Length: 239
Image (cartoon, rainbow, N blue to C red):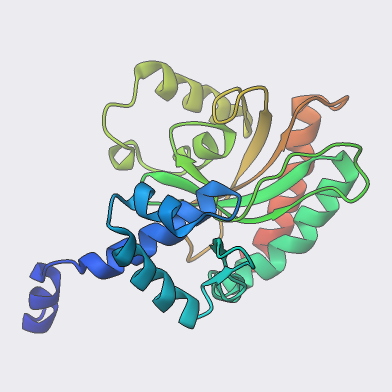
């Protein structure tokens, strides 16, 4: 590490930047527009502080305000998100779309971010009577849910989060032997998920998965279809 890198690493974090990022996370989790007072309360800051932060984010197109003055995420965020692992998203989206429409389930791509499983892209089925909304940016602990377990199976055990129960280790080991993972009620009550690992050269651990309430398709059948898409994505990106 150079002297410059050492100074950067030891420099204190920016509280203002941290609060701005936290606002984006709060708005993403809310799933509906929030008032300035709502944002201030959730950040535990004075209304004037929240207002200044929101004005800056608005100037950059990261949030918008409706006619009532409530704020929500702006379209500029979608453009920024599209640049994250652009080639991976580009190759995955057609496969996610095909699987979603074939199985009538929401299909999504997840990647590892520290100790969390983060949805990078998601497609809902076009003609399903009912489907599960699963937005890009959704995150949960990597120790929960089918895609999280699929990602864990790609990591050396020393890289797993601390205090992982023995039962989870056994579940991941057993499921890895068959090549696919499933979960029920682990992330959102009543929802089921099936996932397969996605290994792409030069990239971190990932998984493709579906989430659904009920289906006539057996989990093993779903997993086999996901495995075909994972192979197609991997081949398109050069293994």
